[in-house]
Image (cartoon, rainbow, N blue to C red; front, side):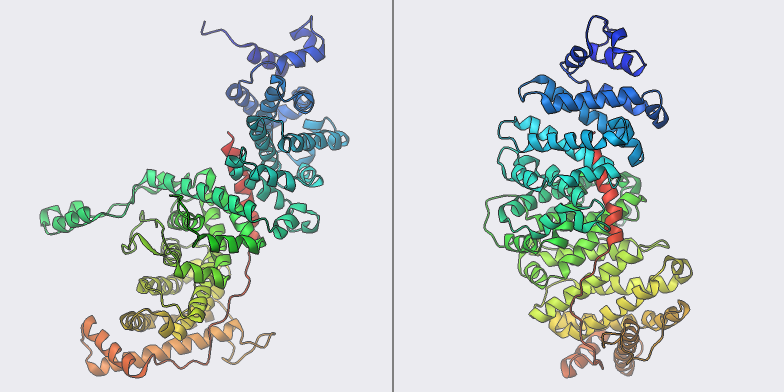
Length: 634
């Protein structure tokens, strides 16, 4: 019995081996042959494996006619059969499996047209029918929910599979936005919102840079004010982020220690013979190489919505203070949690995919930080955000519920700490520094004193400058390192300018001054670094075209300001005694600050946020989102 094979397998194998319909079923005419074939349940695993084994060359030569025929006949039965006809469902499954396999083979656009339509001239009719049939099912009130869901998956496979290739243009000829919106808002199909939103994100990225005016989805998303739609989208994205975080935690449980385990660790530390066993150990990096899971592709629609739609941002902000019976955290909390895991493992995982996810996530952070209302709300609303504790050194333990902005700052620290290497992502570091500067600006404007472990952040910022100075010969080839140095210096100076309005307590302000004094040797190296990188060295009063000081001039001013501040306090410390302990040093700083405030000679002010985007990172990520969209349906 083990050797028996199904009629489905035998029929397709004979077809793809070159046998004609007359040879396979001599007593059946072609129309009945296809009707009978699509009456058979699709053995999806076998069919996918068989198609995957076909080489590109074989598909375009000996199997070309048969493959094209299978696709067109399946499309015909999907388009024409009634909703309760099993042949419609089986034809749909055939199309999903068939396209999933063929589109992963990376054919050129014209090759796909020839393979699937028979000839390029037939493409309009064939692909037009495909998109029309998809739309008809998705918007039908009579189609079963399961059929609608599978049809959505067909659309997602086609959109993700063709990517930026020419067949994708057929998805722009019919505006599917109203259909997708109705699908999301209909209660029966709401559970499939994530797939619908991912489809929409892929569609609006089709030739986004060179054909934006021709893309109806861009205009639709930018102009949407549908609160119900956007709220449902936010809910679905949050679920995807939460699921992605759980997978990291399944690999390594990084749950913060309870009171009992903390006391136990303390008692263990008192036992010299047990000291070695209490040393934290990191989980091997290779275990994280396949993370995040494909559901994290939800980052693409999140980025697009924050970038294009101001109403979505306001809905996210409002949701933080809305009373709800849901046990799930707000979407933004799940997103920040995922960001912390992505940032912690971005470089160590050693994959371009993981880096692409982290890079786009930092762009989302930058977009969030550019909205003063967003930063203000995150600072004033508390929530539970699990921050990654899988890499050493770990951040200090914190209360379960705290200002959400604290978690966002923690995630930034994790990026700054764990991605310093000779092939560092300079652009993403610049976005991180820009995010921090925007946050400082918003907090100072709103006069919000955030209770936070600021010293961890100051040390991480200075560590970036120290790393670049010590590895200059390695990182100089990466490009724009001089701009990273300049922007980091400007941000650090900005922090000193607003520090008295930013720090929650006098002790935190004294600690900040101490960190600045400690950073003097690193700051002193930056002028040499900029000179070595051949960065322009203007006068401190040089203006840019807009009349404001140029970036280079601001950086030069920042070096002078920080050096002057450090030297002042260093002199006071030395006058009090050169061999003082840290506690005594802090007393000197405290006395000086309490008497005269922060001694800073600066005519600069912290600049308001400027709109900053990165089309390159977005375009690079779309490829991964499409790949993961296909993988979700494997």
